[in-house]
Length: 225
Image (cartoon, rainbow, N blue to C red; front, side, top):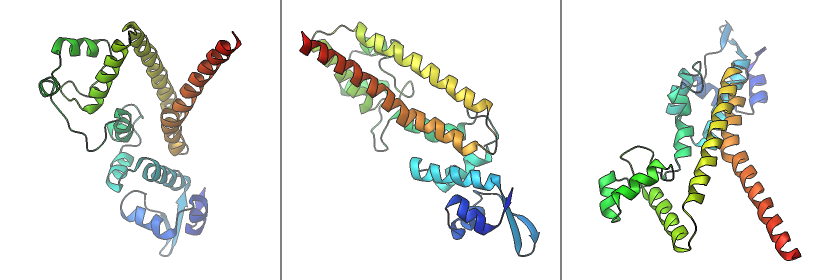
């Protein structure tokens, strides 16, 4: 369908000045020009505005990043680094102001056993984003492992936790591939919302609620004894 600017404003709930600014900045394509003062917008404009709003409001993406991402939007979700960058950054869980260490710096600073560190990495319990890039995030996991050891909980339970985490990540990748297979210009923003909302909302909800139910059942069983 084709829309007047007033209709696009109504559909997107974005002011005319903002839409024109997005076009000027290269975030949106130019409108179809029927006459010198008559322009028409398409469903693609509606869908892209939804995407821009979501990335700005929910992810905090800059105009520069969004523009670069949209230039590559016809690539699949899995092959476009520019599209996945904000997702990958969020998944890394590393705060902007984190201090980074090489492996040697990390071992020396916290007086760690390098071989033990290698074992944790091999077992998938410690997962530095890059081979030689460690932060306090890794340190917090090391401390957690120490707490497990101090109270006598077997190391194998952590390995089992990693096993199930890997299985879940595989399912998430399969979901991403399914989204790639049905993407077009009309559902572009919706598919990205599904991906982000699944990973950062539904995932927490489903996992925590199942944990809640298991603990509640255990508590009820204990009380009933």
